[in-house]
Image (tube, rainbow, N blue to C red; front, side, top):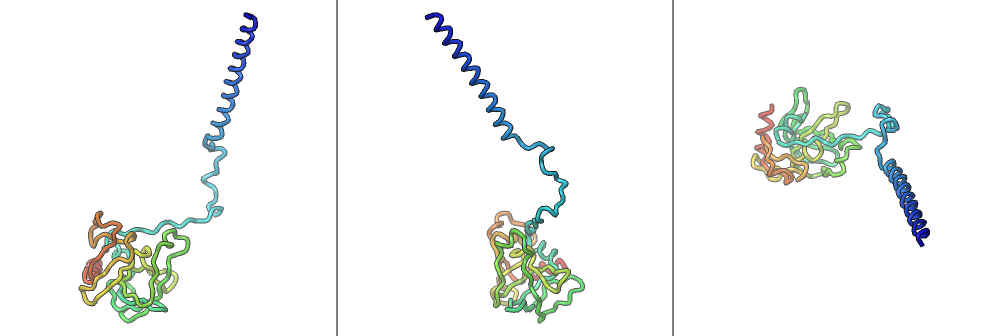
Length: 202
C-alpha cells in the first residue's frame, strides 16, 4: 500500500510538472502572438508615400465671421442659378478681383477625397445666399470656404435681412469672437452685420 501511495505521489508530481511546463510554453507563444511587431519587422516610416494613396485632410473650421472674411478671396451676396451664381453685391474682394455686382461666377465643388465633403449641402437654383469664397488659382472658378462654413442663407431685404449659417455643426459661433455656448447650434445674424465685418477686414 505504501509503495502504491509513493508511486501515485510520484506520478502526480510528474503530471503537475508537465502541466506547468506546457502552460509556460503556451504562455510564451501567446505573449509572442500578442507582442507588438519590433522595429526590425515593422514597415519603414521612410517608405515612399506613393505606395499609399494620399489622404486629404479635414476642412478647416472657422469660429467667427471675421475669420471667414479674412480668409475669403471674395464675399458676395446673390442668387444661385442653374449655370452658376449671380452676384448682386460684393461685400469684400481681395486686391485685383474683377468681380462686380451683376457678374456671374462659376462655383466649383469641394475637391474629391476630402472626408467632410460627403456631409455638405448643395447650392440649388433660386437660393439667395452670402458666400465666402476662395478662388481657384488654376481655373476661373470659386469654392465656398470649407464647404458649408462659407454659406449663409439670406431671407428678407435690406440691412435687416436675416442671414443664417447653412449648417448647424459646420458654422461660426460669433461675429468677432467665438461663443462656445453657440458652437454646434448654427449662427444667426443680419446682412448688415455681415457687411460691417467684411468692411472692417477691408
